[in-house]
Length: 170
Image (cartoon, rainbow, N blue to C red; front, side, top):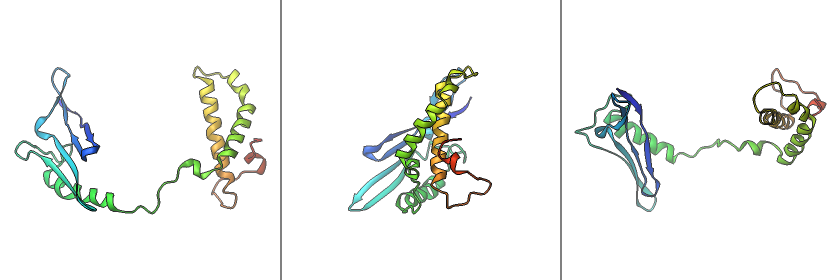
């Protein structure tokens, strides 16, 4: 017998996330360890005032400090981290990878490279799907060529591209 999963169920409309610990029985079945169920709740109080709380049954909850967090950690550390993460303004949000290149140029170079390497699909020696792998590799190469060509003024250590390689004439 041992812990296998700690699934959770979300109720977004009511601001709740419930964690249900599953344990494997001797018969390879799974059962919920009822005493160790806990819930994180977000409630709107008024205006822009919110509260975050953790609900559990302290008489039945048996923490191990690893899979089942200690009550003190849930009440102090987790709540303060959730509040911090939900209120901090991130300065460096990740851009969409498509925002890093010209989609029009990508489409054109991709079509050119697909045409150039279409013969590879016909002579593909592997048992895998040649269209998937050849064209997937062409798509990745196209993206990298476009991304790198936009960085001509930046030196990337250990990398040099000649002009004809960037234009897809490799």
